Amino acid sequence: MAASMALAGWVLVSAGPAEIVVIATCAFIADAVRESIDVIMEEAQAKERGETGMLVVAGCLIERYGKKLSRALHEADLLCGLADMHRLHKLIEAKSAGGRRRLHHRSLHKYYENPQPRLISTKAHTTYLKIAEGCSNRCSYCLIGDIRGPLRSRRFEAVVDEAKRLADLGVSELVVVAQDVTAFGSDLDGRGLPQLIKALDRIGRLKWLRIMYAHPAHITSELISVMAESRSVIHYLDMPIQHASDKILRSMNRPYTKRRLMDLFDELRHKMEDIALRTTIITGFPGETERNFKTLLSFLKKAQFTYLGAFAYSPEDGTKAASMDRQVPSDVALTRRDRVVALQEQISSDMLKARIGATADFVVEEKLLAERTGDPSYAGRCSFQAPDVDGLTFLKAGRKKFSVGDFLKVRITGIASPYDLIAEPLTGQIKSEGHIG
Image 1: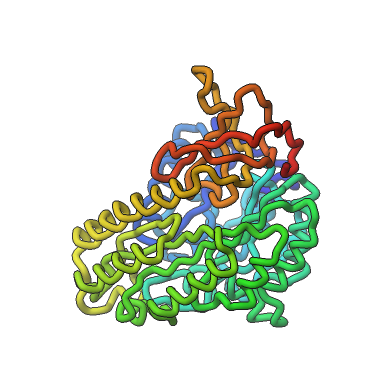
Image 2: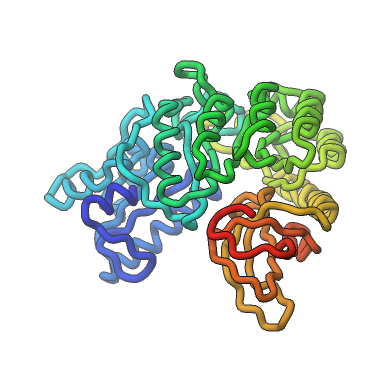
């Protein structure tokens, strides 16, 4: 959306008055819907005060509620679904010229290939590479299949071409994402994530390739071997398991067992001894007993994830789980979530403490104002820390000077919190000019 608007002559502003305000909404769970509506109402009030002009609401809220939202949300001038977001500038031009149509909501039948350049909103050295849209897994608690449609993989060549363009712009870290990255290519010619990794590996300017949102049921031995042998793939994998009780997994329509998960972790750690594993957990799913929950806690102690996100179950209209019997009270779901968080905080802290004294690859993300000699002078991430979700590493660089986007080797010297580390550059290392070493 940002690129299409920029190419049409519009200038992106970060704050203050604007002729057009575009709100990209989420509608995955009730809390996200409420947050989206709150932001829409805030911007509608700003429009009434004359601080902004046209109000555009785009994204998943339109997909989930469509015509119902069009009738209720009079404050918005334009409602734009997912299939039309890449041509937002044309819709705005038509509306500005007196067009009467407010709702643009079409069938999500394919992944559009946008030939336009992207406007990167992340730091210049790292960004996301989306390789597919939609999901065909149909987990019983999830609306993604309804909101974003079934799996539609991007063309293999289109993904590689975009990665090359991003590398040419100076991007060194690509975070590969989709609703299920491990399903990539299964709906097209069969070239999947392992083949894609090999192709991206040949882009020499890319240093880190990070895999997020891998469905445990679709992680193959081939994929694990390709990751282990890759030049650029970080020894890191994000794979939401959601639970560890076989009964609850069946109810969730997650096609694996607790035993299969542990075998998978053993294989990953055998091929990549230093791999960091991230997951997400849902507590309070319908039918979850205290015994099921204790099975989950016991599993988490054994599995030893480096990072974990925990969420209390949210019953969503239109999902199979919302109509299941034995719904767990929300206060019980929240209490169980808090118990998972407390357990994981200790696990994460212990696992990060175990890295003290080890060396790691590190990228500088921010220069800090050191108040005293010996205070950290930079903040950044080690390779086993994903952007925004896994904590930071604070670098005590002394007299050494670095720039945002520099990649270097560091030695981990301590922990700053259960999720944050302290490190120092390896002796003799100098400004890296964006290159490792």
